[in-house]
Amino acid sequence: MNLRVVLVEPIYEGNVGSIARAMKNFGFHQLVMVNPCKIENFGLAMASHAQDLIRGAKVVSSLEEALEGVCLVVGSTGVSVHSTDEHIRVPGFTPENLATKLQGTKGDVALLLGREDNGLTREELKICDMIVTVPTGQEYSIMNISHAAAVLFYALSQVEPGEVALASRSDQDRLYEHFRSALEEGRYPLHKLDKTMLMLRRIFGRASLTDREVQTLHGVIKSLRWGSESHGEEP
Amino acid sequence: MNLRVVLVEPIYEGNVGSIARAMKNFGFHQLVMVNPCKIENFGLAMASHAQDLIRGAKVVSSLEEALEGVCLVVGSTGVSVHSTDEHIRVPGFTPENLATKLQGTKGDVALLLGREDNGLTREELKICDMIVTVPTGQEYSIMNISHAAAVLFYALSQVEPGEVALASRSDQDRLYEHFRSALEEGRYPLHKLDKTMLMLRRIFGRASLTDREVQTLHGVIKSLRWGSESHGEEP
Image (cartoon, rainbow over all chains, first blue to last red; front, side, top):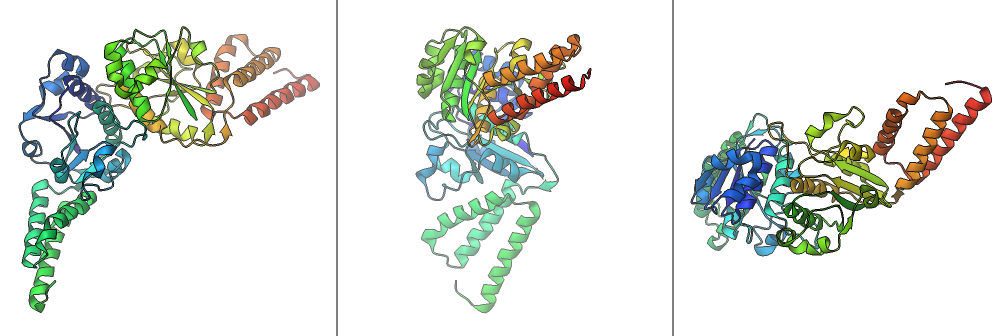
């Protein structure tokens, strides 16, 4: 498991620096920033001995670029963001759940940390395979982003990598395209299609598919289509 | 389990504010500061919606005052502090170990967070019943204190309180005094006495003694002394 920390439009340089420091504390080095604020003296001071991470960070202008080559996208949200959309409101994993999911895997995993004020947008959360939330008390649930990050990094530092190759994001996208076209051909109700596709993404996202499993699922879809064609069935 | 967060001579108001925020995020409210820096606008800003904790914090001038009425004292250290003294270098608990130890207990537990530059002194660590360390990577092990605090608070927020009454610190002190006087009377080698007493404190500290256990141990000491007196044995 190779963690890529993706800061989505961070606003405060102090937080960026603090996050970089916490990353390095727990052995993570790959930092990507989407349209970040300027990182000047204060941000570098907060990074302390992790300024190399800031200087070596990749700065991009879209989330798509930030996610190039990753196998799995994990979005982090505060508790309060959850209730916006039924299909987004997957049970947020705890940091420990996430770590357990990733035990023994290999591949690039992106952890998305959103804006300090508004977190990740609904569209950004839809792209995510998993959602992780640091469970807080109810009285005051909004954590400083760098503190939430530290808790997440600590949990993820306990993941032991292994040989189970996670499917790449592009291979997974091809699988979802296969599903979508199969469903369309199968006259699946069009007004339900997007939500169902999102649900499939959530289900398989939670399952963190391997290369082999993606291939098998292609075979399953093919076989189901072949079956329905040969029997002239309608769904 | 009622957590009292004790900041020992914090230097940066921003950290104090951040720690207060993280405390409230995880449902902890009791903040005590020993000779703190001034907390002004920046510190309050970092506390965000936890400024009430800062305003309600108890400010004292000695660690002794800060620990009044607690049952258990937990010192937090970075990895690097550990090798200073053989009797301090107890195996530092992880945050999870500590949480496990405290499951089902009741009583006030003090968590000591040291100075940002030098942590807790050797003398301060000696007072502690347990030591907790957030395990980091080796490359860069010095965490920002508020991030270490957040990781600790998160772990401790998972402790479910119960009915097992921890022995108060003063009852424990009386137990140690009993041990010491018994050992002195028993002609225990004086040059070893301090170290042995520290070791006993470590052993019983790790065990987080209950009221009942402290009473039983008094009985054990009495019985051992009576036995040695009646048989005229020498140790």
